[in-house]
Length: 371
Image (cartoon, rainbow, N blue to C red; front, side, top):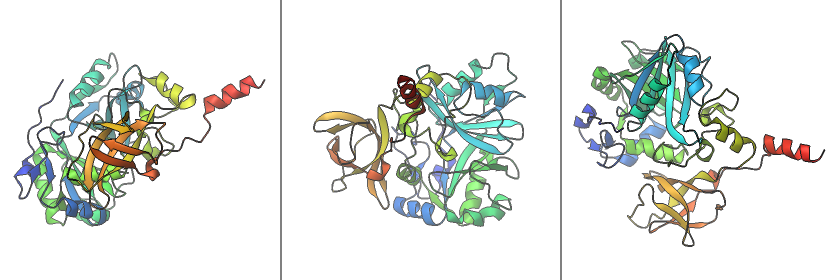
């Protein structure tokens, strides 16, 4: 199922340049005339990004959390009021279908996800309700804005709050909506989920208070540098959570909880975690900046003429130059010379995951074999 997203009214603001028609960000601003300056503002000062093309849905009902807990990868049965989490929907083989962020607030679970996959996620959730007291519906009357930068604290009076929430915490805003803190794409990242008919009002108030308008170019560049994948861009039809850092020891790195009950795809998650290794892993690529050519999402990554992966998001970063996220075979080393299309690429060695820790399942098998 596809979804038609109307162009954001923020595109009418001076300097706004829409994303390309073939991109997932075609209905919002890609930049406002100074893409590198917008990235600097988001990292060092204060920027606001229009992400109103996100698909928003809400779930009400007394069993909304315990029910959602049974059909998704995250442990949310006891999620507290004002708490958020990242979550996944997997297919029966453990492959990623949807990634979404959820917030429990005042008797409602709010979910936002990619526009293209949103209707399918909603359809799946509605089909899985059965007899539970849970009612998932589209929330087209709400949209997402993001605030980035260390000076967000200066906006407290404009936001109508006295203090900023902690990571993955949320607090209600006056006149509807809420403010949620996220651990990415920067260390100072906040999402506002606000009524759609208040979008332009919020945009005007935030920019008047000093927030630099920043396009999705800035958001995507910082996300890539932070090694945060975007579903259906940095993932393909074979991607499992282990490959793209959605399983981790730190709460802010995990969309999969490894100690919870059954959900679709759990067998693959448990087997790879305990006994196997993911066939690919997500890395940061530095692309040859001496040419204006940029590879396209989905292009093959090759080494010595052999295909070893696929490239996802490709973007120019204000400090790092042209960079990309790529899924490459686990056997590819950090020092390998790679080519993406006609562009030479190198893996950032700091982005290579370490897999030295022994797995619990392997330890148990070895122990049994010794006795």
